[in-house]
Image 1 (cartoon, rainbow, N blue to C red):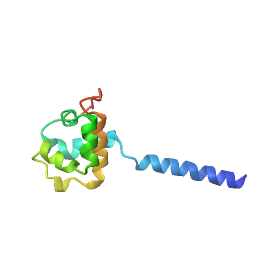
Image 2: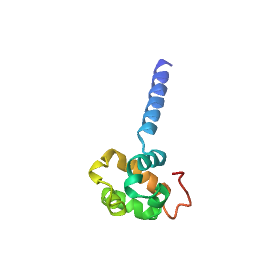
Image 3: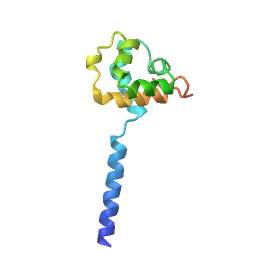
Image 4: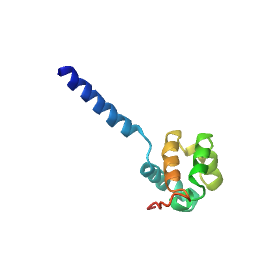
Length: 106
C-alpha cells in the first residue's frame, strides 16, 4: 500500500511538472505584448494572422521563427528574442493564425 501511495504521488508530481513546462498561447501572447509589439508596430492579432496554422508550423519546425519575426517586424532586434520564448510565441501565432477562427485579446 505504501508503494502504491509513492507511485501515485510520483505520477501526480510528474503530471504537474509536464504541464508547467509546456508552452502556451497565453504566455506567447504576453511575450509578444511586452517584447515585440512596440517593435512590430501592430497588435498580436495582426501578427498572428500573417500566416495560416500550417504555415506557422512549417516556419517553427524549420527553425525560422526568428527570421520570420525579423521579416514581419523589421524594427525588432531578433538578437533580443530569447530562444526560450520561441515555443510560446509559436503557440501564440499558431493558436491565432488566420485560419484558426480565434482572436487574441491584445
